Image (cartoon, rainbow, N blue to C red; front, side, top):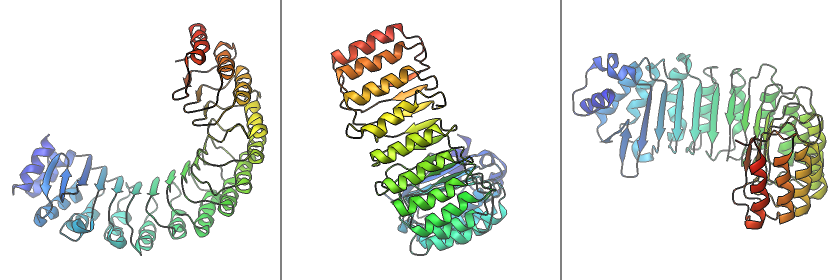
Length: 413
């Protein structure tokens, strides 16, 4: 509340250079949220964006802050950036406390913002997280971004999501200097072959600490998947990989990806392949690789359909294996039939590792299938603690055996 009062005083001419030494110096997080009516919400106040002198003063407050950790910008349009709001960015490079810069739905003036922030990147050793979500980089924005990323080596998290660019090769090259990079998100972009080559090089770096990689809806195909697999095979740090919504990957690409699970270097714990087409042969490949893998804890896939029998059955049979370490299995929106439901139930009855099973949105399970699945809740071997069955189209006859089993189950939380 004190910070709000100081901001209000500043907007009405009450600003002086001592503010950064008082309440404003205690501010940890600041967000500029622009609306469609050319107003900006700062902290919790709404002010007119036409007051240029005030933006310069606001920039000085940010530049002089010693405790500000996170600075967010949302909805910066052409109109906003063509005005005096750029004065804020002129002062930001003086700051040495900000750890996170977050841009969402912003026009970044063809990447010129990165040029203005180069001294900030170079001199602020506390900075570690850069997030760009649904931003317009313009024609040369990726080049300015590459130059900016080359100025420092302290990033722990980098997000470049839904920014409509395919020039990732330029961005990945300087990322190799950020040996402490832990989280990389590139969802909903067009990643070309050069980008995949650069990404594979980043994954192969023996100094890499990358633990999370999101390539959701990135227009990957078989050629790109094989390149990505070449990097994954030699990687010994990645623990979470999200490849959801890449429908152009077919059998060749998936077999290459799944084969990396057999690598002695593999430490992958979370694999997400939701909303893809993984055929029977590719699923058999996944099953074979899972048998030889001891690191995977979480698997998310809805690639189980009644017409893909052999591969699905072999994956379910893996659950009975004494080598199975899976703890969470998400089969949301899968197209089960009675046979697959019974296969899954038989395997789960002997499984000793699974703690979470999500069948939300599955369809095609018959009453016989639900009866079989209810027996899992009665198994003395089951460690299941979480069971999700929402939107499965269960009628009273399907619910009854589940309900009866729940009465005797003492593990579910």
